[in-house]
Image (cartoon, rainbow, N blue to C red; front, side):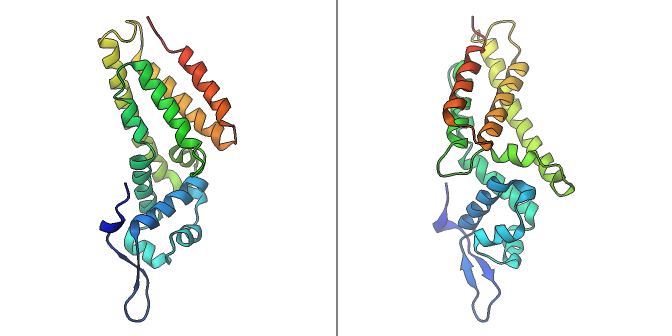
Length: 209
């Protein structure tokens, strides 16, 4: 959640006398939207500072460079937009874990108030020199989420919720591939009804006794 009333104020731009101040939480939310719309490489400093309502010196002073700003935006994205993942992992059955993750992803990437697609998928598709460190960061975070999913599916297999021949790692890879595909489809303009059909088809493939 945003903590506007508790957020420290940062100088917005050098000025005579007392400098103007801005809310860093609001500025970070604005930066997140720019990154989400354009990806890491596609988001220019000019677009970022305009959306955030600050000058470049203030961006550097409060958030660091562009890469540091993106990492903070990614933290915000995970806290606010990917909460459904943590909730899904707590579902009582493995199939419900999969369904909640898939439907939560659709709600996220098809929101009328946010850009389409997934920030992590969009930004990890870039391959220029500028984005190498950022791409590595995204891949590392994705690996951490993948490990948590594998652990949850392994628990389901151990408890008998999944068949004895189920492969938790393969299932996690399968589910992740579908989630990434949903994001790319949404970014290409595919409608929610088509994405829902993909989810239904995916769930018919889910192993059961």
